[in-house]
Length: 330
Length: 157
Image (cartoon, rainbow over all chains, first blue to last red):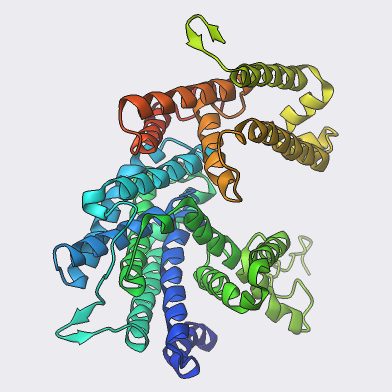
């Protein structure tokens, strides 16, 4: 259908043409950051939105990607790409290690368990001075380059982020369309029911953890050269909550939700710059307002917009009941 | 002032008395009073409680208010030791979650036990192991505990 292809390629076109509108290097920096956030929140969506597991430590996996790149590129003078790959692999391993005890716990216990893991990560990066630079962190992280072509900050790095963003959304879409994606959703709807239908919820949940970790770490890996300096105060519980807000605000269990959420929360502080110290208050009030009106986030609201403009009655798009057969025949 | 050879300040004594007192009060409230019965019903199943005549929204508001009151009491005791800042609540929030989780959600005695265990463990680890890794050890132990007791010590369901 035309509109499906349009809805897929239009955002890509917008992303590619955006620098024409944003001539400023600072604005491109913000756009790159938002792009990274979209990657992370899309990954988070896989585990929380589609599989229903409350993984409340995205900042930790984000940090694994960032710190791996930071350490390998500054200490071992490694090029960016193997460092990013190493970060992703490490994040996957850690996600399985955390996923195993998470299998038995449900609901709030799972939430606290993952929050505890986030704090463990924070304690590790804060205390392991020799590896991570402790509270000082790692600085002067170089930008990625390939065969001498440097993805310098600004326009070039922005397009690198767009590339990885498109790749991430494509991969996540393919996973969600596959039988594994179906298994994710079945696990979220009801684990016991899914088990009776042949879904191995154990491997399903572990795979969900691992796949989401891939994208969260990839985002972190890109974050390190963008900011150039990474330190523990960034990767706290607050940052994890920020990602979760982006997911819930934009709309979980949809591909577009994370995009909307990340853009809104990334852009809002910039728009509210004039409000100075009141921006946090306004930020919070806006988010509460949106959440009060829809549990499916902004995307949930936006999905209904076309219906407001159409003149069909409300039930028109529902499948029609089959015409009743008159048993007396006629 | 010293009791059994352990130095005790008047403030610590006050914390203990108030803490145990509040626990007793809440336990009696939840188990003996009609309102407490309604709150327990709400915890089990919102929809059926509504069918049984429980005012769900009033119950929810009451519960949130009660938690806020308890948090306020805790903060009042903590303020003299810890500095007061707008972000100070976050670390305390996590400690509260952890203490409740250790003890088991849904059990008041559990929350008390969990808080006690957490406090003692924190101090012990901080003194005998290192103070920097203290939090990591505590949280790792929580994860290990949840692996064996997925519902905490006294938790139900």
